Amino acid sequence: MAYDGTNFSGFQRQPNERTIEGTLTKVVNKMAKSPKEHISVYGSGRTDAGVHALGQVAHFDFPYDLKEINMLKGLNSMLPLDIKILDVKIVSSNFHARYDVSGKKYMYRMYLGEFKDPFKRFYTAQWKFPVDISKINIALNDLIGEHDFTSFVASGSSAKTNVRTIYEAKCNFNSDKSEIIFEFYGNGFLYNMVRILVGVVLEIGAGKRNEHDILRLYKIKDRNEARRTVPASGLYLKHVYYEGDDPDHPTKLPYHQR
Image 1 (tube, rainbow, N blue to C red):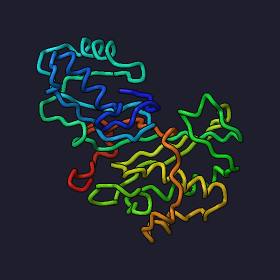
Image 2: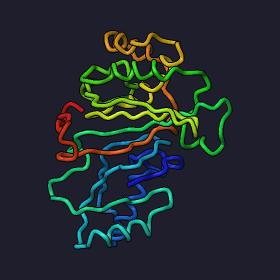
Image 3: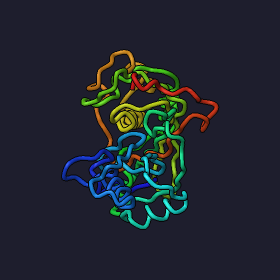
Image 4: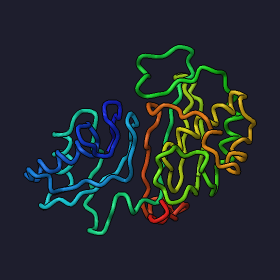
């Protein structure tokens, strides 16, 4: 599914809040004519308030036989305009949208204009300072591989370990839109990890940090040293990978370590 996270309080269901999980759960149960909402929806992971998705994945156990195309049409006809189901597949009974994840790819959009653009405010963040893209790319290269990301996780994380493997970290400058587009692909990401990483590499690009400061941050394991967390509005869950999706990076993070 894809969704515009602007008017949602994140993915996870919360009392008296509009959430992706809550909205989808209501629609699925309505389709099944289950007034007490016996059917639960399980997402591949949580996204925070204001975070968007281009390829979120969820599963649920539907009590009736229904063709994939009919489920696709039914869900989209009942969901609000800020959620769209992109594809529907009937999967094996032991598939789990969260536990079977082998990797995720996130995108972050940063607008470089001097003044805020009213048409970008919900879908990008803003960075006013000049940046050197070559320095940012040097910094991003230091993310590749397995590292302890303790300096890059916000308080409130429930992860058993802060060790993660990053397969790909890159950025491109879109001159037409005055945006830097970041992409991060790894076997798992910690709470606010991408938003903290973007803040650090932007400071490196602006000359506020040494080009290899990420290596220092690995060693000292101090969240305060990473400083800023960039806004949720620029973050997109781009793709969720499962076994067989990417033969070059088949190893998933064991669930008990997440």
